[in-house]
Length: 161
Image 1 (cartoon, helix red, strand yellow):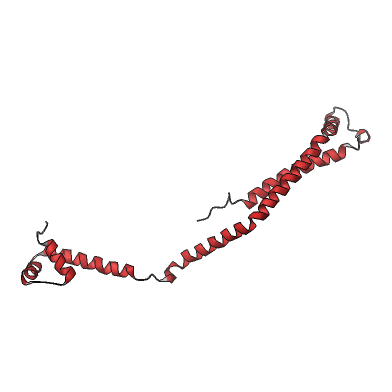
Image 2 (tube, rainbow, N blue to C red; image 1 turned 180 degrees about the horizontal axis):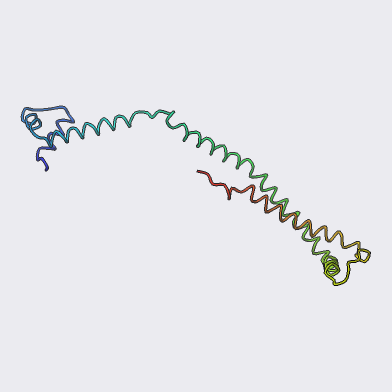
């Protein structure tokens, strides 16, 4: 049911200006009384929410925000070091890759000797092949190092809330 005097009664409740006719209607109408209760409850609820919130209630949220700010500051501070590390690793990788390709015929000869059907004779291995093998192993080690560095410096496997 809807009361036709509801708006007039609510205006009187809001302003506090009552005349005898409105007051008598309000006292006899259950709909208007219920509307007034709801309006007064909403007004008190609005007053409560307008008050300043207790900072202790938001302590965990504040701590998380502080933690994230510190993490972001650390990322910004370490960014030049990470860039330098990646650049140095890439440069070293290029140098070792160049040395490996420079000595590729020696590495192939050693691999052929290792894979030959006969017994391996260490006296027939050219001494010049050892630096080539060392450079190849260095390239493999560097690739492993760069992959591990990338995994540890990126947050790809750590998710924050």
